Image (tube, rainbow over all chains, first blue to last red; front, side, top):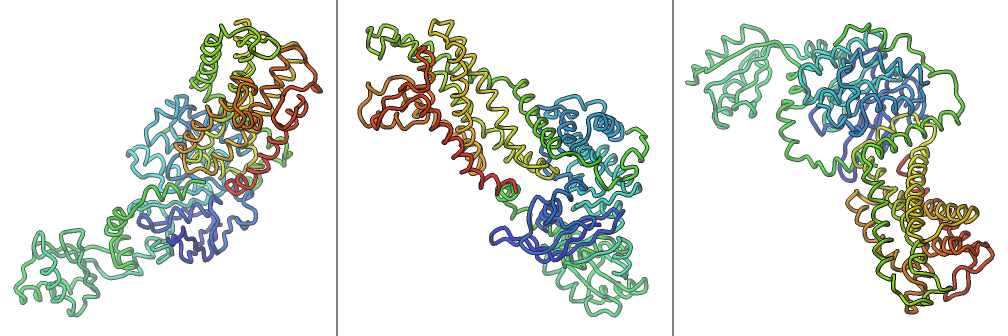
Length: 335
Length: 290
């Protein structure tokens, strides 16, 4: 349904997308996972015809978005990250405006708005001015305006960031219902659990390109092995962790040892099955190291991310937080 | 969360929208909706409207009073200062209102509302510009009419039927030109702070360097030249003539240093200016709205 083909986009010297290719099958709920700055928003803006790529092709429902943007816009609902709302208008007036921009006929539009008010639980406040809305209300209103014209493709940019639990639950439920009713839904998120819980398929973005793609279970299964999180002390310092890493690295059955700096220099290991754990304990005591904690689990999406990028999603987040330039980002979004 | 059927969501997805509609129906629907939004904003936040009338009103009353005792015969044709000033303030009202045309557009750019409009399948994105022009034109005409009524209550006269038509046509041309300028700025300047600064700086000097407050014969040569080139002057003089009752498009209304101009010539210049400015900003709009 959605085909992004070798998309590149740079803002001056900053490369946002570097040969991104993405294929979203019709009727799926597709997740775009990656830390801030991975290029998710840029990719979605290009898909929604807000931005032209430097190179590459975009097709939605078989239509070339660069040649026939209007036909694509008719079929596409877009729920942006920064909710642009007219504070002076009421929610209903916003929806009426939006409907007119999609050329819906008045009686049909009114009926449609009433349905969406019901569906998204907006009856209590839809006739209040938007300026009084909470983040969750705004996001629901935005979802409603994305759905007004019954698009065959719905695109959402981080739809649940900073939302209250109730709004988040409502949005999740609606996204699932939409998918079940045949709509193709593409959402970006930097919440692993969200993508894990919602998405049929996902792509992991890093550095402006797709580094892993598949269904959550596929990706996890492909990773294989068990995860072990090990601490020799509640908070180790860097050198101690490095030493432990050295000790364990050579063990048979241990595939990988990574120091997780975000969590007190604990060690994340990938091992082949239960037997290896005993071996580990022996190895550690021989090296005069104690075990503060050791836990074992099946691979998670976080591990998929770690495997693909060599860092955890949280580390990647922390890294970009300091480097973000809100002013430059606003400029990018501004016409 | 109510248990509405998921089918209300997207039922049988018609891949086509509603049956093919005419481009004109689409265009007028989107333009009307966008214009309606601007008027709703105005109705709920009327301070723009009030301030836009109040400021020229204060000019009219205070400036009129300042020169109330000016010696008779000081002004051409023995006009009283209040009558002279009236035309200037009317034009100034329309001018100031139109100069603000770009502000809502600039806020939409900055706050991302414009992006919301741009992901919609608008038949033509000129409807965004058209809505601004419709809105600001009616706003500035209403404000000017309010000033005209007040001026007449102050005893500064009222143009007769044909005169009124001339006044409105003149104002319309000026408003188009200034709106084009303001919209062009709104799409080129980086933010509303800069736009407000430009509006602030442009406003008063343009008023002083025109024939709104004094005739060219009062001015030193350099200022006279400036005033005779100022678009405001080309709007003020035909209106002043209309108020004076000697209403003929062929009559000379402005004795500029470079020659005499008839009312018709003034209107022609204004029209050319409006068209020229719209042509000038077109590439900018095309780029920003593409």
